[in-house]
Amino acid sequence: MMAGFWLEECKREEKIVVANEEAFTEVRPSVLQVAPPASVQHKRRRNVFLFPQSSNMAPSRRTKRVVASQPGFLNLKSSSGAAGLPSIRRKRVNKNKKKNWNKHSDINDVTEFLEDVRHQERTIGGLLSDKSDDNLFFLDVGQPKKAEQKVAEPVDGKKRKGKAVRPLRIDLILQHDSLVPPPKDVLAYQQPNAKKLRRIGQKAEQLAAKGVVPRRQKQLLNRRPADRTAKKAVTEANNNPDREYYDIWGQESKDTADPWYLQQTGKKRVKRPEKLNEKPSVLPAVEVIAPGGSYNPDFFSHQALLQEAHEVEVKKQKEEDKIERQLAVNKEHIATEETILREQVEGLVEEENEEEAPNEEEEGVAVGAITVAEKKTERQRKKERAYKVKEQLRQANRYQNDKRQQLFQLRSIKTSIKQEEQETKDKQKQRKAKQEAQKAQPRRLGKLKFKAQDMEVQLSDELAGSLRQLKPEGSVLKDRFKSLQKRNLIEPRERAKFKRRLKLKYVEKRAFREIT
Image 1 (cartoon, one colour):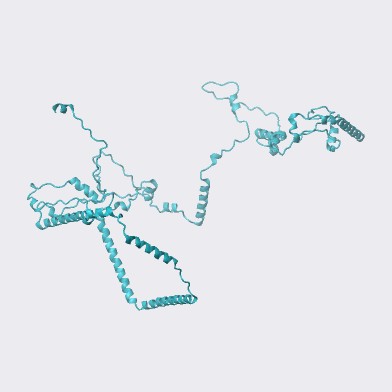
Image 2: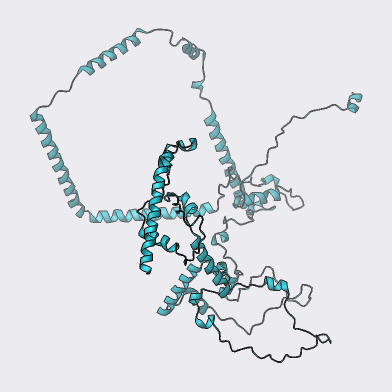
């Protein structure tokens, strides 16, 4: 019965489809005759013409349509058109282009699924499929018995009547009702240089497993243990008259604290460089004058001082004479009337001999240029090669003979080597002595050279018999200034020259003008 009904329905569906095709064939020519609008004419490549479904549709779609036409079938989706009208075929879209993905793609099922998953995570803290039966179901044993309410304690001497205190509505709104845990703060778990510290820790563990002690730990183990019994020194007040006397010129006491502690706390003093302890000069700060400079000197010591001053003056005089000789003009170089006339006439008088000489030289040069080197014969070349070979053999034999002769000259060679070594040692001693002597001499620290102070010497007739009659000479300030320059503490200097930028203007005052 049902099979026959099913066959009849299928035949009726085929008849409807055939009738639709015939109707379409009647209308199709009129559709093709209509010209497309102007906005579409320049896009003919993209024109799409929709046609009704053909009779060769898939059997699955035909079966669904037949089942949907039955009276007992419930359609859950709303139909856009009438039940009897055929469905319109959907528009074809090129999905190779990215701009058509979101526009013509149906993702409602995916969004609904994700929204359902988020809803389950908020309400029950996970997916229902992952929950166990104990979390989803409970055993209903009836309404529980009400427990006896405890009497509330009086607050501020008053008894509260009625229901228990409930939270405020605003607190319930602000209460966190989602079961999704808050995101973990990544910055709270980060550690600076974590990778480096982890690598250092792994290396320390490897060294500890091998029994190797790190250098820092060795220093901590080898340092001197601190004295716990010693008490810290209490600094006394400055106004205490019973405090100990402190010598500012005395030697400083050495630090008794742990050197490791002083180094780590920054209290250890920086080591003074040895170069700062060296004096720039070996000369004393105050040079004592010679015995001949006393107010009542001995005769011989006074004469020795005069001789020294005389040598200084003679040396200065020689330097001045040398400069005068270098700047002096030779009498031969002075121009006379004869030399001036010769210079004026030079080049005006022509001499025949001077003209003939260059011509002869030019002829000689021309003849020399014409000469060509003669070509050597084969005999001459062989003779030259034999001579070169003979010369090389002679040089080699001479070198060998010199080497053999050196065997008989070993004594003389040893003596010459000893002489050279002795000369080298003597030169080293002289160099050291020169360096020591230079230490006592002032160095060149600036653009000016050091000029020694004039010697303060009194002649024999200027000597005084007592201190009362002695005349003061020199200046103490100038002597100290020259001493600093001589000991290489300051550079030699000159008095600054004052140069006026503007000229002085002399104005005659009215009072002076009235007098004159």
